[in-house]
Image 1 (cartoon, rainbow, N blue to C red):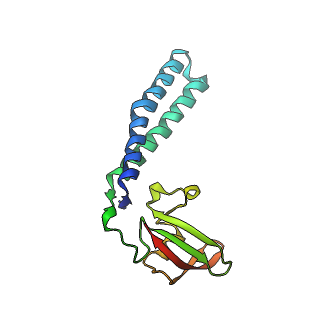
Image 2: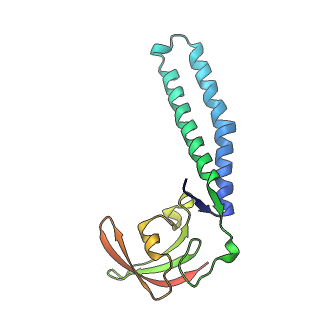
Image 3: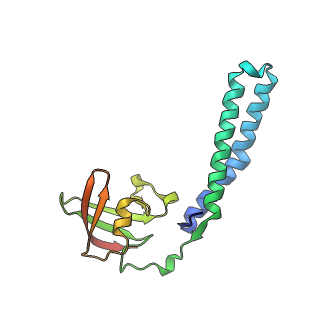
Amino acid sequence: MAVTYMTADGYKKLVDDLNEMENIQRPAISKLIAEARDKGDLSENAEYDAAKEAQGMLEMKIAQLKDILGSARMIDETKISTHEVQILTRVKIKNVKSGQVMTYLIVSESEANLKEGKLSVTTPIAKGLLGKKVGEKASVNVPSGAMEFEVMEITL
């Protein structure tokens, strides 16, 4: 089982999601199944089939969340340094070829959200940047080919 590093906030969000699934969504689906079952013949009951499928998907999500939470390790945010790119640092990079400047916060996979500028530590770009210092360049292989980024700034 792979260890998942995350912040206390990220962990709390996953625990809240799990509680919602187990205490609100699971009983609601059970109620739908019972109502569909009361309507008679299950062999031709689309509502019953849909509710059973929804139940299976929910149980799968619950199991995945439990696995993630079981392997979670909290990151001590007081020990994070800006000397090099690491998880929970904000890095400003420049695409050497295009000159485009981007800023990302490197986070755990479960906390990633590109719209918010949160880049998963497991992505090729983040992997290429880890351990780099300001002024250093990282060559990253992405699906469209090799890209080179220069680290311009590292902050918290």
